[in-house]
Length: 320
Image 1 (cartoon, helix red, strand yellow):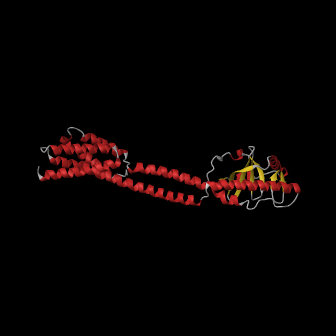
Image 2 (cartoon, rainbow, N blue to C red):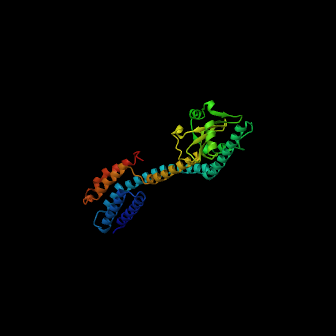
Image 3 (cartoon, helix red, strand yellow):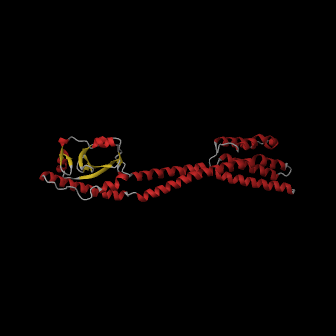
């Protein structure tokens, strides 16, 4: 076997090794089958010195080299697109970290809800005494508005100004009006009946204005506290049918949840995009595999220019 023969076989092995790496990267059946078939063709020439070695060289020049160049271009394009996705993932991670470090924890919120309900219940007891004794004593517990100021932005549901206006509207003759507060008469009666046992339910906000919603512990009744006017009124859940009361995540917690879910999808998408080959090219590779698997393939090798030209044309397309 002369030196030229050996050199062509050596270069053939190198081309097939390059194709093997790309086959392993893309994990596409059409590429893998072509790689295996290329090994068979190489072995055929290696085991049969009487065959024209120039045909093996021509096969790689016409087909393998163009295929490798095409796959490398797809790989480079995919990696560029994946890089953009990972940049977005990293930005999302930084935003998640920033929001997670600034948001009050659910545990803190839960504890402060209990403290706030205690303050409201104490304030309502005091208001009852003030109304009963006809005094002008201030009935509210210390720092009663701190809770809403602290948690409204993250944990309260957003409502429109129109909705807020409807919720705080009342008939004057149906309320007790004191120097410091206004409360529905029937609400005060129900509070007395159930010994002022209520718990914080949810919060609402409209711009800078907030409403705190409370639930009676012993019955399925609700009322609102409007701090801006120290107003207490009955509240019905049906008044805000669009609110999902089962969702107790804060606004930032919801954003963190959504961004985390989005990142999971992006990571999954990036993995798929990294090895994506356009359907048109897969179809062409399947066609090429059929041609090079033909038992008479070597006899028609000179006619393989058409397929080679199609591969080269693919290199100039905007499919990737």
